[in-house]
Image 1: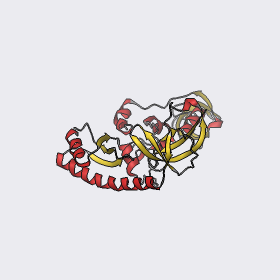
Image 2: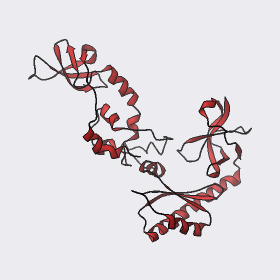
Image 3: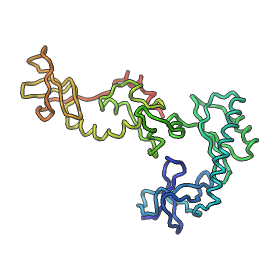
Image 4: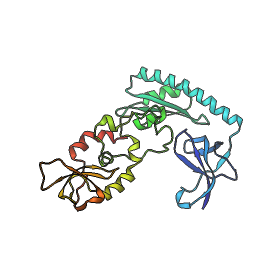
Length: 289
């Protein structure tokens, strides 16, 4: 076991482990640590605790110190400079006529580097832009291309449900979401109904997937052949949440389908839920990051 603290550098970002270095910290405090990007100031979200050695990547970087008032003032000054840098970079992008969208700007705590986050449909040759920015700011410049999901996480907004984006409020990391999940949950494969504001599959499709997978193991699927109290037939409609099935009986093919609960039928031959190639091809862009 190793003693660690969890530190986050963005409001809803990934949590990184650091060695407390003898410091006892509380959630909400800020600490100064060394990262791959340089010296950074982050917020403590996990207090001192013991974790198993296989859950950390050794060696852990130690905490340099608990942030003081001067450190917090430096962070505020950096945020103010980020707004100015954003405006300057926009002008430079227009000057160089680059097909890119600037999303965010971030100063490292020690001001040794400025990161410019942007989105673009393809690769962008920004070498001249970097030189131009370096001549203005007199420090290291890094331009980082991000995906549309990351853009939504940074900018925030309201989803189709009327609530703030999950990614910008509590999701530390994106979970993989697939067309197959939407199919298994019985949703219409209409891009407008299963994609979020970012244009990709809604993250919330992942939340209930485990429940749907369990229900699918217990419930005959559409196309299954079953035995009912009134005879044998094929399942033509399924409500996974209520367990109700609509079945067309073999001896009454022209009659209206009858409804039975899954506990009232015996499964003779099950079916499978598949996403065909045409559906995958048409909706593949919704799965892209």
